Amino acid sequence: MNQCTATYRIYDDKVDFRKKAESIAIGMTVGSWTELPQAKRDSMQKHLGQVLNVDIYETVGTSTGTRYADITIAYPDVNFSHDIPALLVTVFGKISMDGQIKLINLGFSESFLSAFPGPKFGIAGIRQQLGVYHRPLLMSIFKSVIGLNLEELREQFYHQALGGVDLIKDDEILFENELTPIEKRVEICMKAAELASKDTGKKLLYAANLTGRTSQLKQQAIKAIDAGANALLFNVLAYGYDVLHELSSDPEITVPIAAHPALAGAMYPAQHYGIAPSVLLGQLMRLAGADLVLFPSPYGSVTMPREENLAIHHELITSNLNIPTSMPVPSAGIHPGLVPLILKDFGTDVVINAGGGIHGHPMGTTAGGRAFVQAIDAAMSSIPLAEYAATHPELQSAIHTWGGER
Ligand code: 1AE
Image 1 (cartoon, rainbow, N blue to C red):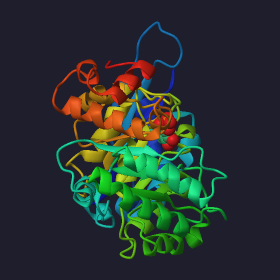
Image 2: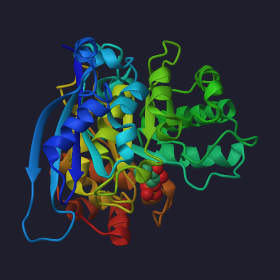
Image 3: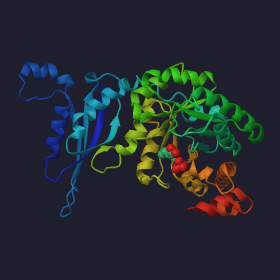
Image 4: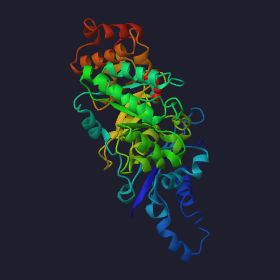
């Protein structure tokens, strides 16, 4: 039978976890069960959820909240349409509000998965767009752009591009506005990218922030693409995964989409509630078609525990899911001294992403980009950063400002 699965971690000092599992399997599918006449039960059988596993963990004599169980329930596909909203309401709708419960994993049936082409570009496609195959990519984030006019924006873009970055993304808080409407900023930034590439010899993707009412998004995206946009940024959680699914699977949207994690902090950090980061920013982002997925790194300013980061990473690249992989982008508070650690944790299929770590460089934005390029070159050649910095002043200055290799 085709079924999707959900695994929950449920905390409770007293409950009988096996009974609790049964009550979820029944309550989230056919409702009441035992009270139904036999004929009705037979006809409902194909809709009934099934308890697949209950693992109980308890530590005797410790404080409240240490008794929990990981419970896996199978939900028949026949119960829900093949879209993420239906799946989420089925597996974590009402019960997300029922006590200390966290959704920690999803399993997708082949038939459910068949509705999801996944990322149009993914890791391989993005590398192909850039012509870069064997090193991590570098992304720079526009900063302090609210209120800037087109020329000011162009200038900031050009300085970032000259630094040798592979991607530049809009700040996620830059919305549609009169000073820098999406098609105008795409036009001037792509021209600046061309100019900078004469110096750097590099191609560059510019992820313009796709914003506005849901009903207008496709039109906005097409407007940006017609103006030369070669990537888009999207605040997925503010709109919903289904909106990303619509955009990413639309044949007219022919550029990679970078998913920003804004709002994720409202859903994952609580130990006893919400949705685990590996589901929220891993499984569901990839399923919905994000080509690049940003998430708070374990090292920087907005931190997430390292094991949760690695779990997101796993979900973005695992071959267990038969759709293209998504490029991991651990972000926030990243500076050049962290590059070797990022490569150690994530390998080379990663985007090193920085805003403050580029614009805050004492020698300026372009030097900020160069310091990262140098850190990547050093790490890829297994040269200690401090040694490489001795002949690379931009890296030297970055290490002096933010610290060296960890
Ligand atoms: C987790 C998202 C990171 C982000 O969007 C951002 O703007 C980071 O900026 P910095 O690198 O911390 O300055």
